[in-house]
Length: 451
Image 1 (cartoon, helix red, strand yellow):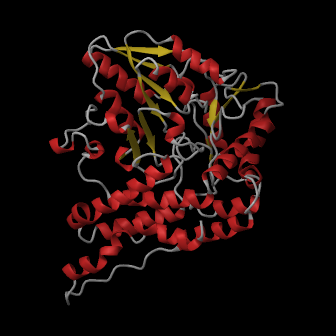
Image 2 (image 1 turned 30 degrees about the vertical axis):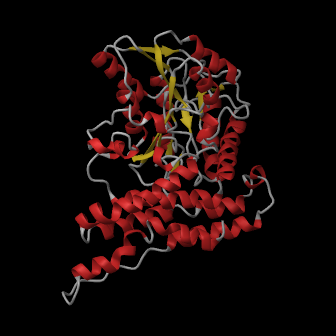
Image 3 (image 1 turned 120 degrees about the vertical axis):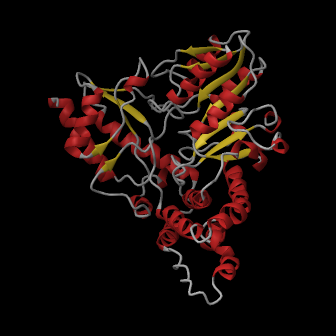
């Protein structure tokens, strides 16, 4: 993407509400001594221009080669406002936004406060449609199948609680799916008398076929819906979603995919999955503003799926009925900047870089006898997320030690699954090799000498 194209693509937020500043100014100034709006922030945009300049140097090189070009990634790292006095290796929990997104959030917040009702009810809705189109293009679907929500939990609960089911109908899921989704299924079981089946899956499968077979074995003649994670949050395992969808559809079963961890982390299109529903958090690997998410509902499933909150009757077959949640912040428009940042680097390059960072630290720790991985590293089975265990060390104690003594942030997924033990490590685009070396130095010491 050339600089001119990129800057033109920023119109959603950076030009954003400011595009109507003439209208707004006409309603508020006219000699009333109103202070003009502050100049638009440009630091984030300038940092992306530098990334694009570096990218031109890399034309013709494979994504795998670019993943190891530290000069290029240094420019990317400097596009964030993160603190370098701590090391965040829990990006699977929440990613930092690049400066171009935080700049847009600040600009949009200030503009919104000048005349809130005008912003909320007049200028926001049409601009949100531009964001919808850009998200659909990135995901590979029709914009009329995309709903902009607050997070993956809201997106997926909409489906789990809104799909029509009768008492005795069954929803099939796995023991490794996200706890909030499992809570939603339990509520529906108690409320509507449906059955919920949790299929056990291996912690470190030997192949994708093993995972498909595990799900297939759980299907009964009452199964109506399957919930499956595209990538398991506990240890980063990627699941064969297309194979599961094909197998389910052959039996007349719908599939809802939890894509909270996959979207923005590695490359795919919805046509690769062929699922009926898909939910994700945009504030994770796409690095959009906090509190933004996406729900995809296949066009012919919209009318039959109930929204979480009541919506106008005329929206019964409109994907926007899932957005009827009250006032929406103008900062949602900065999703457009996150998409532009993602596109300026390239999804394939991002995937290869994140996979390279994970193998960088894992390869250093692998030789130690007491170190055990709960993640399969074969091609296509994982990317930025991996869970590691040190024999004889409680994961909770390890997590506390890493933070309290070394200011390294990881996660502990152990309480969420019986067959997964360890701390979850997930570097991000802002993570440097020096930071991973510090983490490895600490972990090697613990593997040799204990806490």
